[in-house]
Amino acid sequence: MNERSVAFDLAVGAFAIAWAAIFLRLAGDVDPLVSSALRLGIAAVLLAPWAVRAARAGTLDRQVRRSAAIAGLLYAVHFGTWVASLALTSVAASVTLVTATPLLLAIIGVLRGRDRPTRDHGWAIAITTIGVVMIGGADASLSRDALIGDVLALVGALAMALYLLVARELGERLEPLAFSSVAAGVGALALGLVCAAETALGVDVLAHLDGAALGWIALSALVPQVVGHTLLTRALRRATPTMVGLATCAEPVLSTLLAVPILAEVPTPLVIAGCVVTIAGVMVGMRRSA
Image 1 (cartoon, helix red, strand yellow):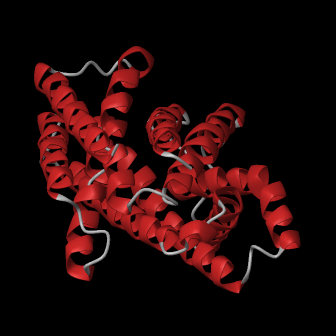
Image 2 (cartoon, helix red, strand yellow; image 1 turned 180 degrees about the horizontal axis):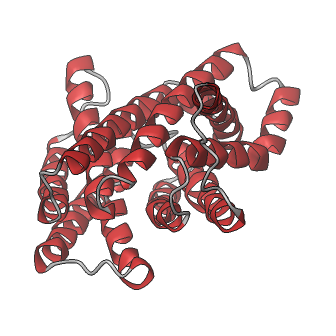
C-alpha cells in the first residue's frame, strides 16, 4: 500500500463515515442501543465472507481474533454512547466531540512513546482542534440533556481512539475486511445483550423501529460502517493512529454540510469558519504525511 492508497482510504473513509449522523437522525427515535446493534450486526453479515475466507486460510488466528474481539467491545462503547448523544445534542456538537480522537491519540502516543505525533502533526492537530471547537462551540448548549450528550460523545471518542490502537498493533497482519467483520459481530452481540437486559426490565426498546427506520440503519451499516470504517482500518497498516484520527476530523465538516439540505440544519457563520479551519488542519496533516 503506497502513500496514494493511504490518502485514498483516509479521504473516502472520512466522507463515508460523515453520513452516519445523517442516516441515524433520519432513523428517528429508535433506541440508540438498538440502532447501534443493528448497524454493527448488518455490517458483520455483509463482511462475513471475508472472515470465513481468512479463517480457512489460517490468517484469522487466535491473536487476531482476540484483538478483533477487544475492538468489537470498543465498537459497542463507541457507537452506543455516540448514537445516544445524537438524541440529546445537535449533529454538529455530537460529531465534533466524537472526533476528539486525534487529540486523545496524540496524548496516548506521547505517554507510550510509540506513534508519537511529529511537530507537523502537532500543528495539524492544533489547527484542527481549533476548527472543531468553533463548530461545536457555536452550537453549544448548557442544558442538562445537551451536556449529557456532549459527555457521551467524548466517551465515544475515547473508545474509537483505543479501537485504532488495537488495530494498529496487528501491523501487516491486519486484514481489514475480516477484522472488521469479527469486530462488528462482537460489538453487535455486546449491544444486543444490553438490549435484551433492558427488555427484561420492561423497557420496550423496539418501540420506534419500523421499516423506514430499519432502512436508514441498514444504510448506516453499508456506507459509514462497511465502506468508511473498513477503509480507515486498512489505512492503519501504513498510517499511524494519530494520522487516521486526524482524517476523521473532516467528519463534522462533512456532516454539517450534509445536514443543510437533508436535515435543514443551517450552519452559523462561526460554524462555517470552523469548517474552513478544520479542513485546513486536516490538509496540513495529509500534506506533511505525504
